[in-house]
Image 1 (cartoon, rainbow, N blue to C red):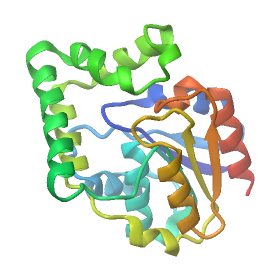
Image 2: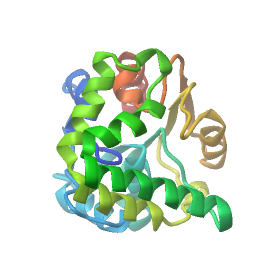
Image 3: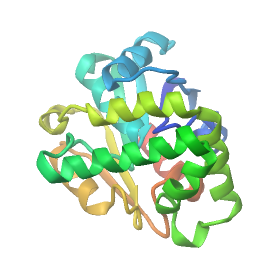
Length: 235
C-alpha cells in the first residue's frame, strides 16, 4: 500500500483532509504533518521527508501545502511517486505594488488574529475562501474551528513561509511523475486559470476543475475530490 502524505494549508490541520483520509484508507496509508511553528516552505518540506514512513511516497498538498509539495519534489524528486496540487500556485510573491498589497493584506489579518483572536480573523478571511453558498453553514464553522485551533503565532510563522515563497514555476516542466492539478471552479484565491497554466507546464498532468466549489475544496466538495484522488492513486 502506498504512503500518501497529505499536506495542509495556511493554519489548517488534519481536519482539512478528514474526508479524504476516510475515503482513501483502503488505498493508501495517509499521514498528515503538523507544521508547528516552522516558518519556511523548505523547513516544512524537510519535515515531510523526515516524517514519511517509507522511502517513496505520494504527496498531495492543499493551498500552502501544495507549495510545500512542490518544495518536497525539488528537494527529493526520487522519493515522490505521485504529486497532487490542490487549490495552490507556483508563483513567488509579486514584485512592486501587487506584492506589497498581498503583504499588507496578510499583515492586517495577522493583527486581527493577535488582537481579537483567530476566530475573528477567520470570520473575515474565510468568507473569501468558501463558495458563497457555504457561508455561515456547518462547513464554514468547521473552517473557523480549524483556524482557531492553530493560534496566532502559528499563523504568523506560516504567513512568513508564504511571503518568502520561492518561484516554483521553473520546476514544473521537470515533474515526470503522475500529477493531478485540481481547484474549485469558484476559487477566488487560486482559481482555474492559474491551475490551467500549471497543468500545461507539467508533462502529462491531469487537470480537474470541481464545480460549485471555492478554495476549501477538500471540505466543500469531498466526494469529487476523493474521486479525483482515487483515480490519481491508480495511475
